[in-house]
Length: 580
Ligand SMILES: [Zn+2]
Image (cartoon, rainbow, N blue to C red):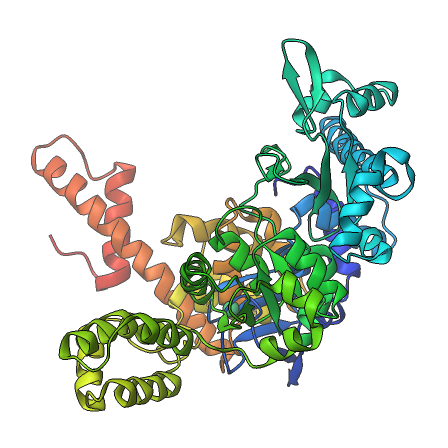
């Protein structure tokens, strides 16, 4: 697997990590027999379809059809790459990892870039807290009632005027021009390198681990642009990250709720006001990637955007994206003329109250519309229904959908029945029934049974060879299985991994291995093996028939030819005697 960490080391890590203990840090596991189940953190559900099998060292969700090892799970939860996870877990269980030279080089480049960004954050932060140069920044924060403690928690900074201070600092620290440019903190001008941020309050933007990736800079007064952000880089894509996530992810997952706000200052103010679950998208509308990131930590998101028309539009758009990602969305409305930041400063109790009493999206939309649409006319009612119905259609829970239809009927005076009819005609249906494990085909069944009871492999080996397996991608798995020595303990996912040719096979394999143990005897296994063999032989017979018979007729082949011999042997196998 593309990790450049030696396979043997990955094996060792997987063997020493306690799958149940590690997964238990993220989800609530319930024991069922020799396995565990949990609500899947990667999709929305009410009954658990995430299965964990410690004997085979794997997990699989039958709902969203993903699965893998403990490393895959931590990788998806933490948003790290495979190598980062492997190194993290290796350190936990005390394994030393040898790293190849290219990997080490790439690592050290990455390491240096993170180091550079961290120093930049430290430098700006120092200036804001202690330097005479940072005076304007300190005054501004005081004006906005941001405490020193909060400034420290967010590592806020001050970028001084002038425009060469940082460039000089980085040069002195031994970073090359190239490195500084790639990190996006300096820009190239005809006069040489200049600092990107000048005379601005600085917000470091971090990944979930708290590593600095980029910076947002806010101008004081009326300077334009009001916000200036680092450009995208090899480490930073604004679609992928959320401001404040490194501080908020713990509180979000503990409280099972995230609060989404629009700006950096909103996040800072909410945390200071005792709502540490707040995050913001980065100078763009909310993206699906950001919604997925949130969904790793929670199932509920409260949108607390500005109360102006633009904020309302952003709320509806954001709600749609969050719902698509499987989150339940609530909307907290701000009083006329306030945003979360201003309300937090004025009356943090009122803010907490607004968030606690957040309403469903459809409720919010109906409230907004009612202010602009005249519901006393038939046209007004029709407009109202046309706007609201699609939102009701997006609700996946049918009971909640019914409740909203009832409210829409109440507000417009149009009958529930009629609304239901229009809803059905409109398309989207409520959540389909939970998907259970799919029925395995013959080859998959045999793979499952032999991996669970390896003592049967010897019998299968007598009947089936790898080439008889019909689907090419399954063959390496059978090769691994048939190559097993004498043993009784189940085959683990880790043992199969080196034989997988593509990443996408992992979830296919966990789906097969994680099935409930199939009730079977050795005789059933023998029958499965025979049916695989016979299907393969029949196909071969068909191929031979088309080749051999015409060639015999035309005298191009005689009966002693190996192809002829094979053909007649196969015919005997299926028909007992030769007929010509
Ligand atoms: Zn799932």
